[in-house]
Length: 173
Image (tube, rainbow, N blue to C red; front, top):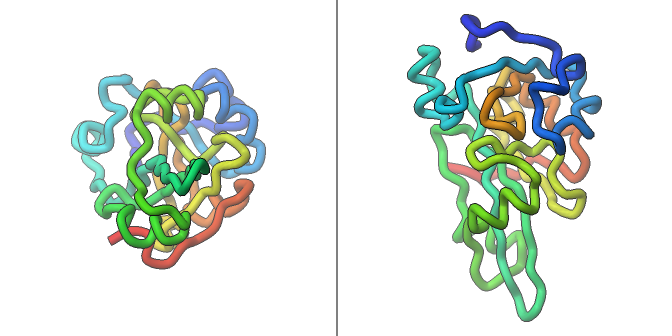
């Protein structure tokens, strides 16, 4: 997967990781990192440039919902070829009246990661991480590294080592 890029052990190359990702990369000893042109950070461009199917990539979206004065936030990780069920499943699990993608400026500021590179690794401790079963079953998946200049590759099941991570059936379609 993305074999034309030089893969390095992520734990040994913190300079290729976003600052929040560095803090938790030790939980994922099998993670590899590879450098990319930041212009290729978006999944479609990345896969086209490397000749990989989009089904090899996981996209992390930040969803936010409100009920009364309470705001709830969750990170949802699904394969790039699917869409997170924000309006039904996520809304109901968050127990909010309306759920939507967090505004880009809020998601980047609160995660400490760059837009287009948000990853479940290193997110705020109070954000649950919901992982679609297809990601968890993937032998290898490519995800963001917190910075647009690199990507992580790891077994999908390894992501369950992250705090507050759980597989959620029906998360994406």
